[in-house]
Length: 407
Image (cartoon, rainbow, N blue to C red; front, side, top):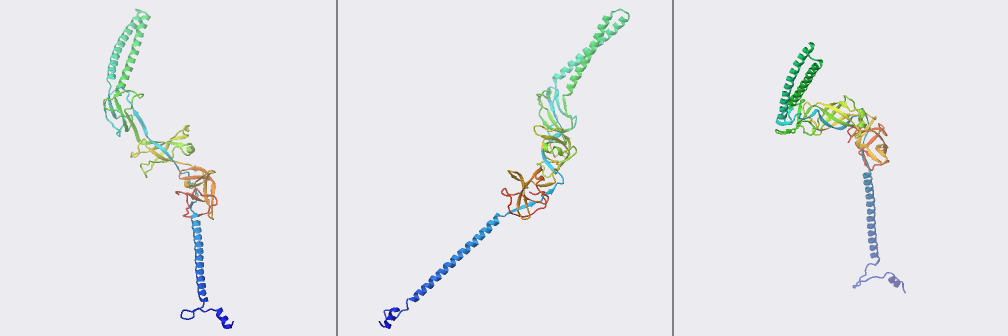
């Protein structure tokens, strides 16, 4: 073959139908390679973008998770106990004097003059009774007394005559003694008749039911025409009377606080139906013994009630002074209950939590007196989460200097 022939075999030429030459095939391959590289580059850029987006998203999720896992807490510092504060206890208001009024005579109610809520004075007439049996018994007793008095007069004159006859030795001493005995017996009979008359006259006086003391009528249990039985065994009370100024307040003080009170201490009385109003009383009597069934000490408070805002029988709250049992005090909502005993959560300077075991000296309701377990400069978490544990890291928000009034 000639060189011309070899050249034609190495680079074959493409011709069109008209005999014109076409571009060589290697140009198309170059274009294809360029397209492939462009596609590969685009795929690589897309993959890289996806990887970067995933990394950024993972980092955002991690930061969000870390932020959500961070605990924000509010802390207070223990306060020094200036005093024991007050112990709030339930109490019952009673009239300074209270009494049911029964009839002493049996009869029928003629009329009543005081209804419930009426204020009466001592000795004021409350009701009248009709007692026909007692009236007849009194008339009979008076007649018997007159008979006895007449017999006594005769016995006295007879004895005096027999004494004169005895001086002249006209009668025996035995006969004189008999007359003297008759006279003595008649004297005794007259005294018995007088006593019976006075008894019936006293029963007659009980026909008038009067107030034994000044106060307010709290009950009226009878009406005109009712049959009234004497006594208080099976009969009902006609009226109930109470003296409302001053009042007595009876409080059952738990044994744990029995040493905190003394006669003369001032207390504050409040009633839920009178919000914002306080009434000041004085402890006047303290029971000398602990009640065994309830393990409590009865305390009596005298409470002035000049405007009658308080009513006997009402339920009230009594703030009794309490003695301090420890030097430090924390809010009651700082307490954690664990199986090992009561704890409080303390935060150090680095924000790490330590659960401290404490000894409670006294529970005052909204606050606790702590005997041991904390220091005055500790930061105590209030309203801690039940899941909080030793070593947890927390962030402090709204730090407070005082534990009083924290909620």
